[in-house]
Image 1 (cartoon, rainbow, N blue to C red):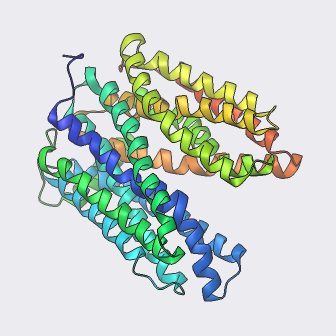
Image 2 (cartoon, rainbow, N blue to C red; image 1 turned 90 degrees about the horizontal axis):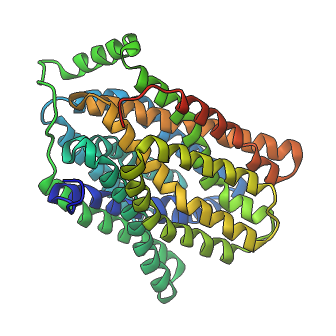
Length: 410
């Protein structure tokens, strides 16, 4: 059973990660941040002001999804709701991405507003996507399927980005940006079709007369009775710390490289290499987990990140940064994938969406502590190497909590 190929439902689920990665790399990472600065200048704002507005838009839209995640997840556990909510928010994300291409180049507030809608759709849809993992596969195959999702997700982000990169020289800068947004939305839409066609909610609760009210009551009950789920509670605490370190290293990588004197063209090449390396590495993590156990491989992944933070202390040249990037690429997707599958094995299957809502909120709010620690260390010491090294605290705490976490997953 474990060694056979992916089922139709598993493949369709994996392809959604392939689909929505176009939004992550083209819109959020590569194109829109640069375009926002340009539109802000055309509107009369400085680059610093526009950068602040962009940060606020990211933070606010992420915050809204984070606080709504448990409620959305709890509602999605009722029969027929998970697919419906997934579809609504996916379409909000896709239509919002199309909308980015329609905003005039001197309307910064409209651009940021539409981005927030698209980002809310993207982030919220992922709550239900993650929860569908428990519907499309079994516990014994969960590592393999979750790892395939992350692996193909990295590759699915690279392909449309390369298409954009190769064709942008044939267009004006503005047309190139519009093409990027349309490409991201079309890619997202087309590759979501298999998910819509073949993936359905298998585990669910009976639908009450007042789903929203009942969902809130269930969340309150779950929080009050969290002692009944010690393995879930302790894992989420460990996850909060170590995934914060993982996300911070990725988000601060470009700034770190620039601060040690690495040219932007080299940085972009390195970041693209990380995406490519992460594809097979994520899948390898899934195979290792099936052989050694998810828990042991997760401990190994966190240990690798502790090594990365120590190595970062000694980086001063491009070749050293490239080695760091390779190390990150080998473990970033794998640790994210196995965290998802490990959690999926722990949660009650008919309440998977509710619990993945909590998983989502811990992941989102973890994005606060790491950048704060990195920024404070950089400001106090004047060295980004020491700032990166300070993240060992997050991985150390996460590893310590995880080691002592009771488990039913393996």
